[in-house]
Each structure stands twice: as C-alpha cells, then as structure tokens.
Amino acid sequence: MAPLLLANISARSVANKLSKSSIYEKLLELKDIPFLEEESPKALTHRMLHARDILSSRPLVKLPSEVEVAHLVQILKDYSSHGQFPVLHGEQFIGMISQSDLLVLLAHKGLFYSTADKGSDLQATHRTITHSELRRMYPDGPSLEDLEASLTEEDKSCYLDLAPYVQIAPYTFDAHGSAERTYELYRTLGLRSLIIVDNNAQPIGEVTRRDLYSFQQEEGSEKMKAA
Image 1 (tube, rainbow, N blue to C red):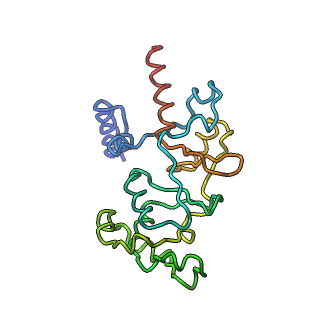
Image 2: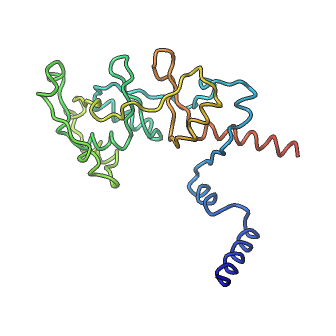
Image 3: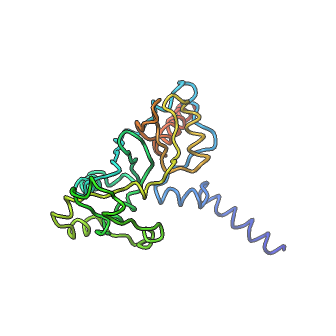
C-alpha cells in the first residue's frame, strides 16, 4: 500500500502544480461544453427573472406532424445547429424529434406519400418503421447533402408523417416559472434543452446550456471585479 499511496500523492501534487483544473474540466473545455455549477447563479434570483426572460436567442423552429419533404430539407439546411425540433399536430404540441431521426426518415423513401394520399387513410397509404429500424443507421447516419442529392422533384413534393417518431411528453417548463427553478430542473435532469411553454401549453422558446452558463460567467466576472 505504501508505494501506491506515495505514487498517488506524488501524481496529485505534480498535477496540481501544472493545472488547478481536473482532467474532467479539461475534457469539457476541449469539447466546448459549458459546465453548470450546482448552485444557480445569484443573478437569476436577485433579478427575479422568469423562464420567459432567459429564452435562447436562436429561433424555435416548429415542424408540422405532416411535413412536405422539400420544406423539411430546407429547414434542416437553414437550422443545421438545431439538435431537435418541436412537432405540432395542428395547434397541439405532441413532442420533439431529433435532427438525426429526421435524416434517417428522409433516407427511407418508402415513408413518403403524395398529396393524393394525404386525405385518405394514412395507415393504408404508407408504412411506418420501427424504433429499431430507425436506430439501425446509427452511429453513421446519412448526411443532408447526400440525401438532398438523392431526392427527385417528385420526392420533394411528397409528405412525411412525423407523429409516430416523436419523443412524446418531453420536459417542458412554464414561461411564468422562476428562472432559478429552470436552472435547477435543467441541471438536475441533465437536459440538452428545455422547452418553455405558455399558458396554452404551446412552445414559445427553449433554454439551452449556454443560455444558463452566460449568467454563471456574468457572476464570475462580477466576483473578479469585486476582488
């Protein structure tokens, strides 16, 4: 035990002299992932902010449950930084769908159906794929450029039914809820994004890790100035 203890103490002493940050903090920096502290920034509490006050500046792009292929491709091109999209059936928010799932669906042309089929029984006019089929292309999914090149004009005029593939009951938070509670919920659940909804349960925006991290950075800057 003595040699092991001596080696561990020596390694820790050398590491602390080289850098005060742990290897996990360095990995987060390399991957450009903001780390959220356990306690929420005081700015969220002192300013009495609500969830609606800290929404992400990037637009919330909503998709209809029945979407035209050409429109879907254009959305994915214009908003390539969006990892997931809320899906609405009419005015009802039914869930979220990831960008990777959308790309896999576009690769299955058998799921497309024409406008002539749109008014008839969807179960009879086009098929669906199972969850295992949807995940079969992971981790090497198709690229949007390759998919767009493979689509004909007839394909682009067809429709896709997204309803069977959405993540139902995603985590949401009321727009009038406190920003502090938003931070706690986001960090505790380890979310990628949190959808903010209004009184009618309609999505009005999202809160991302970077939005919350900006308040943490602001608090750190104020402490440095005070020191």
